[in-house]
Length: 434
Image 1 (cartoon, rainbow, N blue to C red):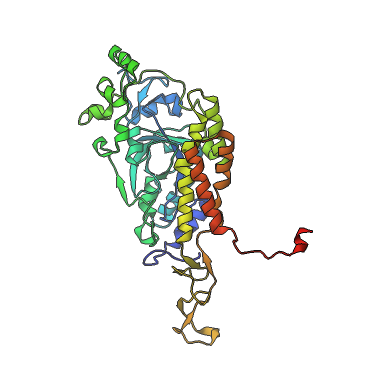
Image 2: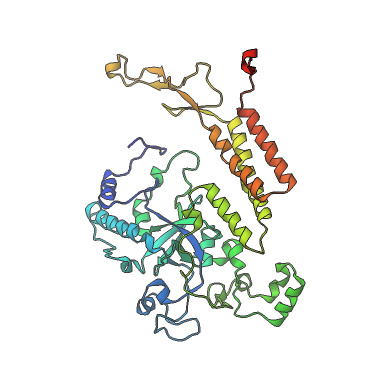
């Protein structure tokens, strides 16, 4: 252990750490164990698609299919309940290890009976969990009802929206409810900036559609489209102008239809019939991800690769370059020994923070104060500022961008070069030209 970073420097019981090590369970800074997976919204499923027998689903409240017929087959179409969750089978090992850890903790530390006693993934079906998105402080209660082979978590659009997510490639974490209740503690959260983020400070036990983001309320629930809808699309109107011709969740607020009775217009294959993993996770570097996106754009007739390149540079690379450049010019310096920070480099060239001595063999008395004297380093490096310059140049050269974007990139690059390049005059003699 390197140290305690909470406000009161409260340690977690060492027994919990020993039991985690025994079962190979990782831990987050708030004391919980989590597994991350990509967010994928679904509204309907078949029992065969999530690996849960229809009789088990009957016990979980799925008594009829979407057409009102009694559930008696694994191939019937069911409507997903808003707070039911289908995690990736890749999370099986982590969740089972967490179950064994929690059970061991209940028996050995709390002197209680084990709770999960899970032997395989089927034993987790029906248990409660917590979904939590990064940079938020509110978890949402959910129930595990099955598994998918994809590296993703399938859940209702309302559930994802309740976590403050819009399902555009983001990943959220899943933790078992009992793990959160037993092991999360505000006392061990870091006291620094952002210390209370990514922590389930509150838990939403029920989703209220009227309180979530607007995006989930724009979900289309129609079973079919009218002739008037198709005729209106010929004029290519703004989508808002056709809102009255489409059945949206927003129109159902305050009724049972806000969470049930969603329809669809076209059948599809299995839930996990497509790619099982996101290319954003398999491709390692930002350059690989960028080039893959542009390569796809060149294959699609409806996409302009040049416009995509311009948009990525304008919305991602340039703001990042500008922000890092500003951060470099305004950065603080930090002591590598005591972590003290300064707005300006101390004139002494080293850390001047006063620290207390502990006496002992140093010859000083306990409580005496001395200067730290540690090395002071920058907090923002040159590499962090330059990291996107080369890939931006390559994209501009290969795909081309509009003149305005190109000139902005050149201006920002010159600003970076003027900051880091050595402008001192080099004295040369005639021998340098021989």
